[in-house]
Image (cartoon, rainbow, N blue to C red):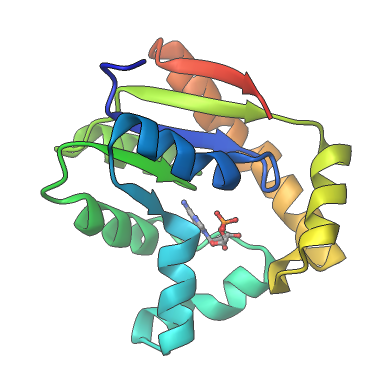
Length: 163
Ligand code: AMP
């Protein structure tokens, strides 16, 4: 793990990846890129992108692959190392990252039960932590993001940690 510098963090919303991400980045001395934070900053400033994605995010839906891939891949351009929190969330995103100059070397999946994360998200209280949006995000994780973990497992890059 200490030689590994391009790390993606996978796991349900509320599984602890956002909490652990800065610690992992500090340990590896790699820049932390939180995709949710990047997107929330676009929404807060009201950029064209922010306007397009704000409603999707508030509802707990995923932002379209081509938008999020262009944000993330341009953010990673020129970075030798990184810790990536919140990307890839679809197999198409995983394939785009894999094909880029920033091919990841490790995927860490934070494993936590739906009951535990639902309790944590209720306590957190972001816009997209409202009950309907939480249900939506958990369902999306099952449908779109779990295959990403399998994709990394098949590439022999997946390590699971207790979230
Ligand atoms: P997060 O802070 O990682 O929970 O992300 C908050 C929201 O940003 C998500 O619910 C999505 O609407 C959007 N988002 C973050 N990362 C991605 C991604 N990789 N693909 C699509 N949408 C994303």
